[in-house]
Length: 198
Image (tube, rainbow, N blue to C red; front, side, top):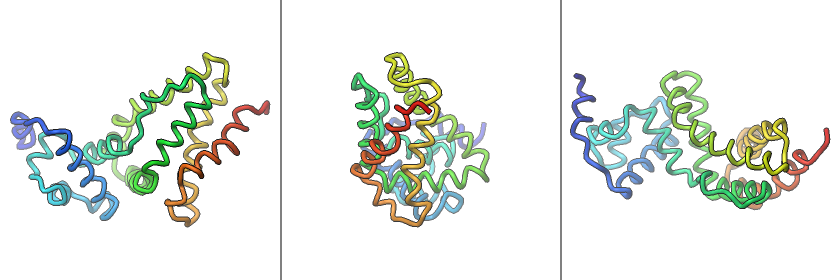
């Protein structure tokens, strides 16, 4: 039995508040130091927790950091169901805007590091898969209502990625990714594409 396994045998439940504090510390530490330079020790210090506490609840740094994003992002796709595709996409854009600067900074850091770290890449896949499935559910509902074709639905994710990351990739401050900006992008780019015949 490894020392990490031994620690997990004595797992103590974290309160939602304490869990949130640790995940927030993990996210901010990665954005500040970069993924590679971030250690479990650094996250523990930032959270005022012990390494043992972190290992009781997360397998490794990769799982902890990716979980930090998914739980701290403010994006709850399973809560979106307005009964219409346009309403669903508007609600999604509003969610994306609420924490855009922090989310974009962390996602850029993780996506860069995942190319070099197989463990992080695997954690991203494992933790993000349920969230991608929730987005697929939204699009499937739109297909079933006849609002969109499967081919068009497949293009929504790249368009949203463009909306979120184009400012950062062109040197703009991610603070420009506001609700107004994202809703305008939805009206001017995404919806016209989805309704076009080409």
